[in-house]
Image (cartoon, rainbow, N blue to C red; front, side, top):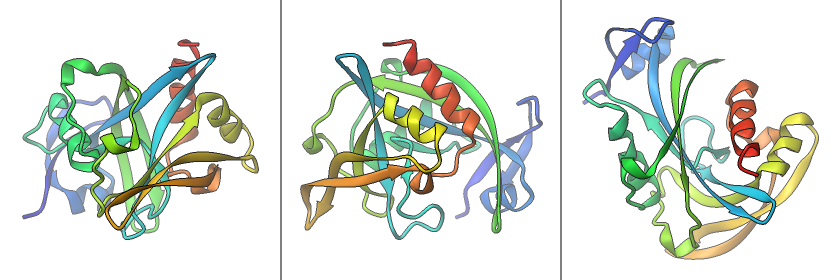
Length: 204
């Protein structure tokens, strides 16, 4: 059964519902849930990025938000926490999350017109690899990226940094190292990362 989304006008006022396919085909505004895990260590803050599965239809193998997903027409923001458990195998309470607000994002690709109101949440907590049970169809690894290095990546399209994390091999958590740069970062508009970086800069 195809997913049904609530759709909105540009002022984020609900105007109806539509299927997932129709929403992305004609560029209807809809809402998503974004959750960033992070922890502070010394003078810097580290974000957990997921690496999307190589089998994903869109943005395969790229670095993305810790956990995120679309909200169905029957769901409210608090229901978005299901994405965290589904993708990462970690159960969190909505009350534990900090709401940063929402940003409108518009991305046009050859096969999709994606107009989203992204509702952004954070959770401050340090995790070990064994805390995660990844949904292999969605996520192939988790990597830690410092906010200071993310700033450099966003400021220079040629800058890259080595990041550490883990991937799953034969149902086992294996240490992994990747190069992190703008080219392998999931396509969110620069304003999104500017908003995110400014928030975490205030925590330093």
